[in-house]
Image 1 (cartoon, one colour):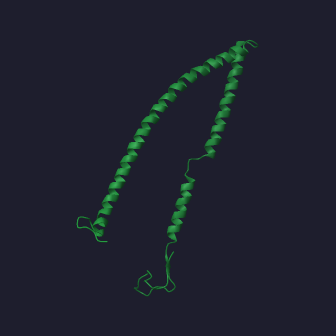
Image 2 (tube, helix red, strand yellow):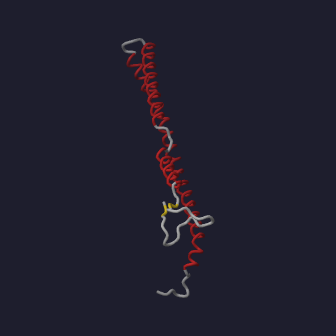
Image 3 (cartoon, one colour):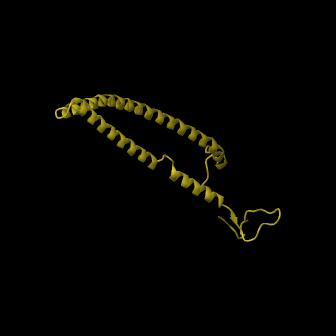
Length: 153
């Protein structure tokens, strides 16, 4: 199969390859920046919505605490019912803090799987060598020649 005169040859194509790879990497970085920016905007809007919701939840919880105090005040004096509800809330807060601390200790954000893969890759790269039967002569090449014994490992 012959090539036409208007088509570039193999060496011309190979000469263009590094430039094309660099351009591809630059375009991919630009796409990644654009994608992250768009997702960050949506994340920001979602975070504002959650903050507004938490604002209303805060006041709803206060109303529920007042209702609990009023409900217990039917049986006990108001000061005692307020004290009991406050102690109950402190116990719940303590349990939530303890649970949160235990979860944080259990799930330390260290990429252990990635580190293990990196260690395996580094170990594999350190083991790359030429395994020839005879050591090379002084000043000789360390690579096996065509037809000689030896292999890559």
